[in-house]
Length: 173
Figure 1 (tube, rainbow, N blue to C red):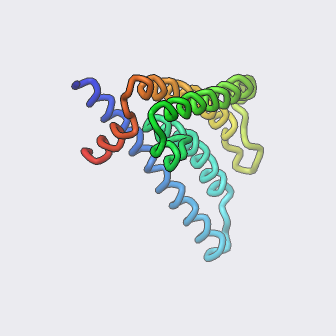
Figure 2 (cartoon, rainbow, N blue to C red):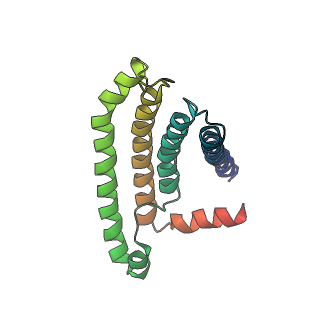
Figure 3 (cartoon, rainbow, N blue to C red):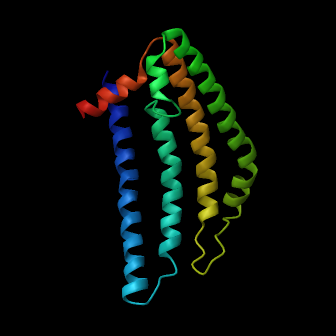
């Protein structure tokens, strides 16, 4: 049991760090609004930084949602269904998620590798390496989501309700 708690604390730390990105995005956007409309001195970097952080946060949010098994489910239908139909829904979900994630990874890999290896930049006045970081992050997130989809599917087939476990962890912590 101690290793599971250790993993949980690592996951909590990572989640907290990504949650802080929301505050940074809000602060940067607020600063840009003040600079642009109050001081009439817009920045070159604020909008792009908010875009960059939002893209990374979006990729991480997909992983987080799949980790908690809270992804791609119409709960009104799922919760009201008998167990055999839930298994059918789980199979359909797994096929859809794997198809999407593997397509994103397969077709996104060449572009993301090129962007990373050439340190592709955004092409604006500030010129941050948004493509060099976001493209690989999307491919990595898709692969991790696929792995979590398989884990969730196996757990659901074994009768382990991963959504309830995630909710209990949220209540206990």
